[in-house]
Amino acid sequence: MNAAVDPPILIASFTNDRLGLSANVREISDSDEHELLVVDAFSGEVVIMRYFSNKDQAVEAAKAIAGIIPS
Image (cartoon, rainbow, N blue to C red):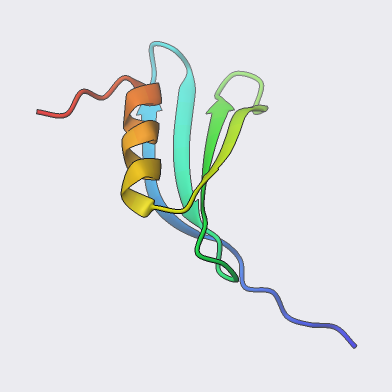
């Protein structure tokens, strides 16, 4: 029996062209967790993967990593 799995939903994405990083926050569909993935734009490799139970914390972490300073 094959169970269908819903793909993660992209919540936010931030890019820092100078550093070559992309920080993405995805909602994991079968749980209350939010996944933060930071990808090296040059190699395509995931350099940071972290899970948060709170969406706002995950988005703020992605902003900080991408170098976006809240106003």
